[in-house]
Image (tube, rainbow, N blue to C red; front, side, top):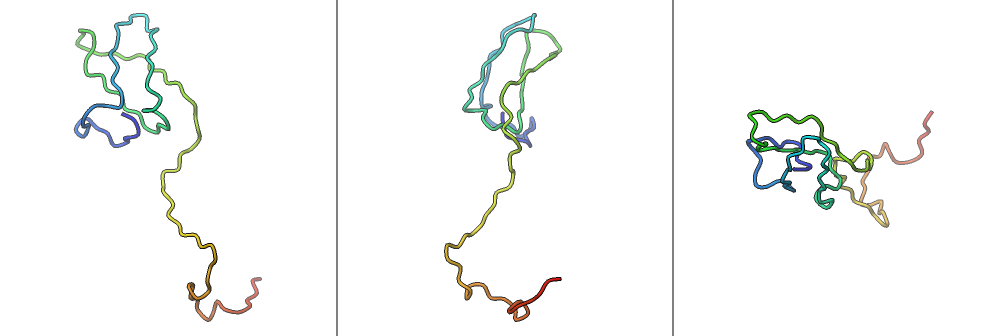
Length: 104
């Protein structure tokens, strides 16, 4: 699963973005390709290994990830209204703010 920072075993629903059938590889040289469309702009990545190759214990020694760092992703949406021709009557201000004031 990608981009689900709050993902836990109890709230994982359905299938992940991509499932890969692992091949027994004692030398650890196999590389698995993923579908780039499912993993663009990933900020969180969760991997789940439901079984292994018959052992009681699953040992993962190395997971290598390749890709390009695209910089910090803004996590907040900005909602703004822009005016092509602002009208003073639409923006009431106090009398204190009217006129010339010098800032020192």
